[in-house]
Image: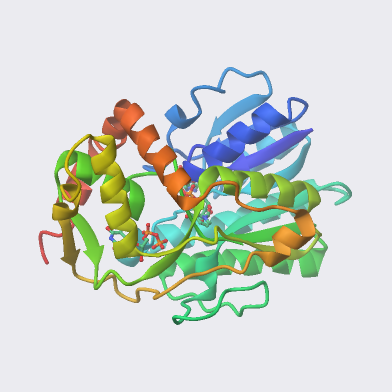
Length: 348
Ligand code: NAD
Ligand code: TYD
């Protein structure tokens, strides 16, 4: 059977593609990715020669490309990860988010509806974020019943996409499942998100920019645990259901970066406190959500999934990966990255 994974050259997508290609040799995995700044085929170098893997460069907004793909292959399922994914970029330029995250999802759904003559045995899996639920106060957790209340252009575009998926299910009977996950971290994470940005900046001796007072809280999940959850939801999740996926790992940004600094100092064999000197409080993000935290009891109870990595173990594995892959880091931080990030805080 053919399975279309969108955004498979990105951070989470590459871990999902690798897991499915290796675990399911009978599946033909088609990775459709536009290779934006965030997509990188180096992430999949180790599996690209495997016979059950095909890479297609293209956009999910390209309906004729999707028509060709769905005509050529009997695509049984879609795992949809392709997206513009960075909140700060969505604040600077929301339109790319509207285009890929909303229009792209609509084009993909339309291709499924057109080409799937029968919905029997088919499934559309929307990979979404807990950010669609907005911000929590200092108490409580998001659950599958939490109302949508997105605050950033990124989360609003993901919320719109989730609604379109649900609408295709309700209106046309398209079989679907949605999962909303907390913040991921791990190998191959593009160094614009908090953890890989700070790993990169510690190594470069640059400032570690902490927005506002640093007391914003996120619930961190190791990316390989997310990929395993996606496998379980795709194969065992109930039709038309939502699953929340989280790591039981709440950290304020400042506590997280202090821990990261200490682990980096230990790995680099230098006195504790060295990296922490790079911490710099900078202007806050507009509309910054105070706290995200997931109650993952539904997926734990119904599918038996729990995260295997503690945060300390996941963070140590992440740091080790970045230290062992300096070429990856220098490749993705050359060219356009330099001018984008070097000018980031100049005006503040
Ligand atoms: P990423 O930015 O690392 O990767 C996105 C991938 O999508 C890239 O390979 C990019 O080239 C591709 N892409 C972008 N626009 C495209 C288009 N028009 N057509 C085809 N491909 C396109 O993102 P990520 O962090 O791996 O996130 C993957 C998915 O998981 C996203 O849908 C995101 O909303 C969701 N998610 C992410 C997190 C997180 O913490 N990173 C948490 C929950 C949910
Ligand atoms: P980020 O990794 O961008 O993920 P998200 O915004 O999707 O949660 O940011 C994680 C947290 O870290 C968030 O509260 C914003 C904060 N942050 C900083 O303080 N400094 C930074 O340079 C970045 C990128 C994020």
